[in-house]
Length: 277
Image 1 (cartoon, rainbow, N blue to C red):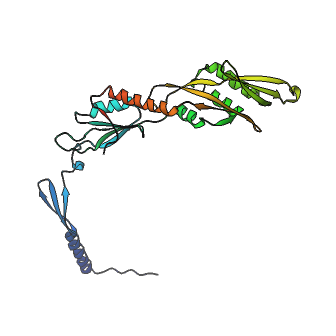
Image 2 (tube, rainbow, N blue to C red):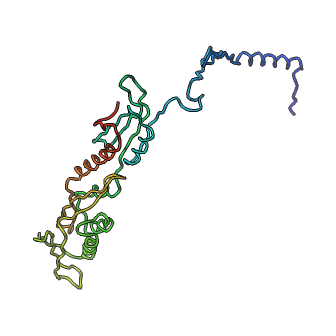
Image 3 (tube, rainbow, N blue to C red):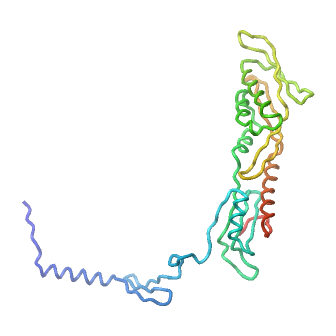
């Protein structure tokens, strides 16, 4: 059995006195001078700045960078926050437009800490067409791609291209032997049936050699027409099909230039080529 004993009352009073003295020694002494507190602590004298934004109802100045995704949003934020000395920069390599809303004035410096950044984002359709550009796919893969992108097919019409896609899907058990360019602008493929019931039966399948698609490069931008040229190869693995887009980089550059133009027409500030410091 454990026995507990208590310290005498006078001993406890002495311990408490030591604790009280120690606490008093660590309590800071506050001296208010203007907008500052000079606080003495066991570590020395520390100063607390009461002019900081954390002690105010509102910040002293606007700071931070706001990122938007289209010209309309850029103009909305610009209209709300710009002044006569705000600056705008466009970077065609990075596809960005940056506004320094509190840029330096002619006569003095400013913080340049409040910025608006337009970072364009490619649409899903644009990215998918660019991803398969120049690649050869199997008949079924090519047909499925056309079916998934019927809204972007302009000439021939999406209905005609759907029919072509379905024809390729139906002709999976054939042996493609040759391809001929027709005067109508189509590519005609000759094949021989390999199914047991139709073995040896010959057939033809025509596909437009050139077709036009409509794509929106960036979210919130306008649409552009692109020309796609059919590519094919007949080998041991059968017929493989694809397309090659004509100058997609030029279309992307034109789309970015049109975004800058749309912004420039709505503001009184020149859009400079480059990036802010």
